[in-house]
Amino acid sequence: MAQTHTAHQPSAAAHDAVHPIVPREKLQFNLDSADIPTYWMDGDAFKSRFWDALSIIFPPGEKYFMSSVREFRGQITDPKMLQDIQDFNRQEAQHTLVHRQDNDRLRRQGVDVDRLNAYVDQMLNVSYRKKYSKAYNLAITSALEHFTSIIAHSLFDRRDVMRGADHRVRAMYAWHAIEEVEHKGVAYDVMEDYAKVGYFKRVWALVHSTYMFPAIIFRLQNQLLAHDGFSVAQRVTLFRKGLWWLVKPGGFLQPMLKAYWHYYKPGYHPWQETDQPGYDHWLAAFNASGDPVKASEQTRAAMAL
Image (cartoon, rainbow, N blue to C red):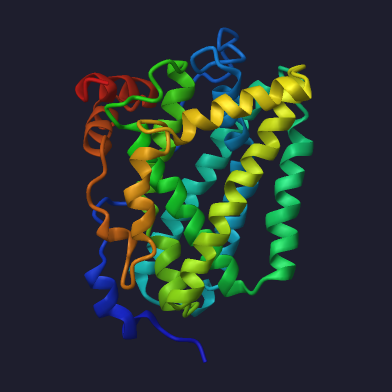
């Protein structure tokens, strides 16, 4: 029998979103500019192709996220939850659109983006859907949404891992991270209140995703570097040095670690994470100009990055 959200209103009220979910559409990042270099981050092949692999993952990944939430929409009658899902879908659809534009940049470099997209799509939207229950796919979605939301901790951190990035591509990731912060609890709410996923399945999905997500990134990244002409030995060297950039003290992952571990706490909810560096600066700058590239650069200036 379908449940209504009314029975869960006390729980939902305890976890209201701190930041409203605001779909922002028809944004311009000028990702088709011919002067964006192939290695647009510090002139570094590993770093640039790490982010490019992420961009390839996002269109089929967002499709998986939206489909996983949609499986439970028929059970939901609460107007607030339905509006959150609608806004979540609109934001994710925009992420898909913009990352496809970014992926067109890779196509112009001769990258077979369609083949790489198809690999991710087959894995998530075909194999996972056949292999796992609707509830577990939603738990995977919630876990991956946790990863994408905590990236904001690294993008807006005084260590400034994006200092040497092209300002247009950097702005795209800043905008994406901001919107992940806004809707980070939507899939979690559906998972908890409607899919009835308990603690152990929730944390196992995060363990699963902690292996799966970087494995996909590194697989695609390796293929991008092979496309660039790097030999196996050269790629081993690039990965050895690049992995240190990721995990070293003060590296890319360090600002995320505390927020990552919070997900394992019993009683955790994403809306409990109220400290989101860069959010207020970015929002004020974007609302003033409507330009996500200007907003990114003004945020960096305001935060002295």
